[in-house]
Amino acid sequence: MVLEQMRNIQIIDGATNSVYDIFAATDEEFALIFPAGTDVAFIDEVYRDANASQLNAAFEAIWSRRLVKKDAMGIHGVLFYELEEKKAYYPTRRDEEAVNPNGSRLR
Image (cartoon, rainbow, N blue to C red; front, top):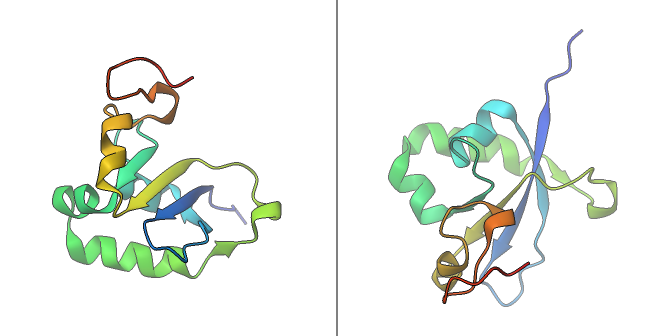
């Protein structure tokens, strides 16, 4: 039996009571959310750039795979809900390339 590769996605939600859960996604599901080498996504852009019914099915599966944070073996992507102001910090949609609004590196 071949086990499918899973990637962990942390959800950062603008809700006051958000707990920033981590969910496991298959490689195919991950690729729907994070195109071509990106690891930061914003939900409005995800739905703007992909097939909604395909995404809905992927998210339904992903939401069934919540991980306990201490058991997660890394975070492969971050998905923002709301928090439009964060887009300025991730112009390339790659976490390691995060910048301040003036263009200076965050790390």
